[in-house]
Length: 372
Ligand SMILES: Cc1ncc(C[n+]2csc(CCOP(=O)(O)OP(=O)(O)O)c2C)c(N)n1
Ligand SMILES: [Mg+2]
Image (cartoon, rainbow, N blue to C red; front, side):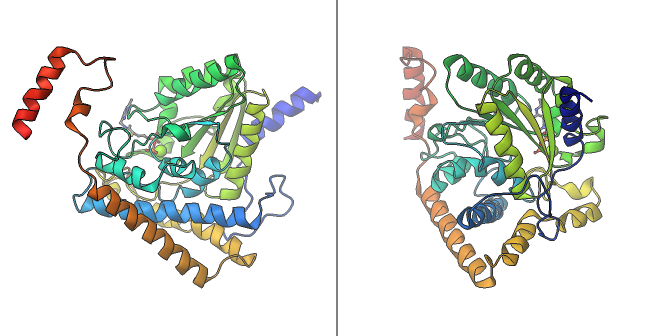
């Protein structure tokens, strides 16, 4: 085999086999080419982020159940995919999220109180209550608002990456999607354009096995999602999405490659949606509880905890302290969000026209007469 053919064959293999650093018991796999090189602080930081996301999801889902926020979608079971990929970015990079990557906004500097306020749509919410809950955006973190329409963020991400290439900005765009989004036209349009123009984008697909009630088996007849990249002329990599070290390593490599002018990569992180699709869903109506039990054994946080324990970096006491600290942070953020007023009525007519037209001013006055 010549070098190119050998390289292509190895790329195709990576798109089907699943790359791993830790086994399900948290043991480091020997001889892996994806061996990590993170400091002890970085390992603990990854663990803390995963734990923060899990606790935050549980607390916010409770707020939804109490009728204090309208809607919520957890990323429970997918924390390694979210945190491992987000950790591989630099501050100048851009993120186009899908439904479950709010944790990445936090990792990139979105304050927790602003994150919680987004779910309330109040005056602290930077989007002024105009988005559905869980559709976070934070400009200083280059974290772009998500449209609920599945897959639409992908052409936007590719356009942003293309613009960066034109301008010579050495930034990378991380575009998230779910397995369901791979059946949308926008996915294929984005992949094709990214391949032809070799833009610095990394597509990160959280294959959590379900798209609301549609199982992965009904989503594609391909061997994997990652292999779809081959048709568009670039690399696809399949990684164990519940192995935070593997996710980090694979994303880091893809980001480095894109930054160096090496073009796009499609990463498929194989994971599992442990909860319902959202607070509006009841998964017991369409999926086997045994399947959930099986995946619970592969819980990404427990797996990583075992690894940390084996390295002497985790014990019960540290866990209790961490959870107490995180819960206190979350409580404080909820208190701040709940004490904020609703967005000012003026926001109803702002941000569309450079100058508010007289007709909208009149309507605003009329609304004020009814509400004051
Ligand atoms: C274009 C479009 N079609 C259908 C829907 C309804 N819908 C909302 S989420 C979703 C499933 C998304 O599944 P996936 O991409 O796997 O992401 P996940 O929710 O599993 O993270 C669907 C079909 C939508 N929002 N937009
Ligand atoms: Mg899915």
